[in-house]
Amino acid sequence: MGWIGEQIDSVKSLNFRQVLTQAINLGMIVTSALIIWKGLMCITGSESPVVVVLSGSMEPGFQRGDILFLHMSKDPIRAGEIVVFNIDGRDIPIVHRVIKVHERQETGEVNVLTKGDNNPGDDRPLYAQGQHWLQRHHIMGRAVGTHLSSPSFHLPDPLFLHVKNWYWYWMTAIVKGKWFFQWYILIGALGFLVITSKE
Amino acid sequence: MHSFGYRANALLTFAITILALMCGIASFSDNFNSPSPTAQVQVLNINWFQKKPDGDDEVSLTLNVSANLESLFTWNTKQVFVFLAAEYETPKNSMNQVSLWDGIISSKEHSKFRIHTTNKYRFVDQGSNLRGKDFNLTLHWHVMPKTGKMFVDNIVMSGFRLPKAYR
Image 1 (cartoon, each protein chain N blue to C red):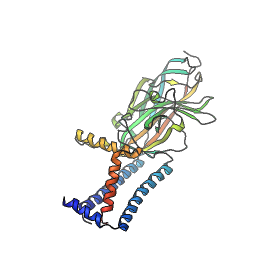
Image 2 (cartoon, rainbow over the protein chains, first blue to last red):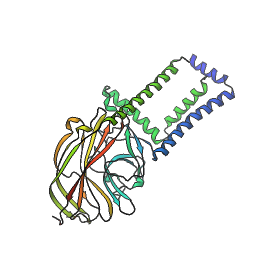
Image 3 (cartoon, each protein chain N blue to C red):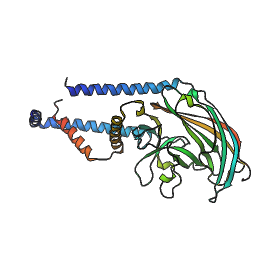
Image 4 (spheres, rainbow over the protein chains, first blue to last red):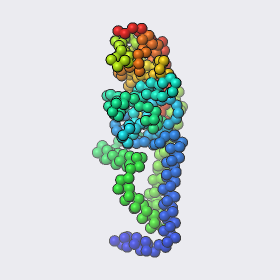
């Protein structure tokens, strides 16, 4: 109770310039994060330079919650590459491997078939109705590297899965940019803390 | 300045920076590995070779694939994804790659292998160009690290040809 009283007192004692300075600081932090994100998009040439693996279809190589770094160059798409693509009408990016490539002579247009390493069959059932191949414009990027993924650690299993699910939940939220109500609470709390801190 | 929150923040930032640095060094250490893998493929039999009702050629093969990929593994290797692709050119397509078989090698102990198999994935052309077609069988491997950059390479084995007539 004493702590709440202190907080209320400190809010009352703020003058306008202090609040403004803190608000600008917060704004600077948020915009520099945005600049870094957009800069990464430019450097990697991909709409989505970092992706979170959402399903277990690429195990044991990629687990749910792993972070992949993407790069999209003009190089032709070849078999074996791990690509991230969107199906028309769905907004979940899928991370799978290319198993078939047919590239046209003159135009260089390419028809590609993908499959998850851990799936028994190829991705045709996942594509849109009547679609048998992916084209270049469906593909957002190629995976070039991966961050340290979880199975190397041996926490007790239930705790570990709990932690991993939470982590995965927040990472997908960040990367997909979806506005859950928790974000408003978090941003509000952050704003309050910034404004009331003396630094 | 010396509050718990401040110290915890400084500690966390430092820890994450060190971890990221370690991941970078681990990945960099993979560059010192100079792999020397070997591979061999034989087409033991053409099981059947037909034109499908939709006009595309399809062929079924029995293959014998043997390889020694031990030198690809480092301490930072999580697994090696290996696949065999048939590669050929047609009048319509400058490049066709069809994966016939793939496998995951999770440790160095399993990386020297010999496999006798029919093609895992259907060898189907876009069109009807496979009769008498010369093609390469290329063994590709993707070394997936525990952390860092993936390494990709392949061995091209040429000199394979499909029969001139359907069977």
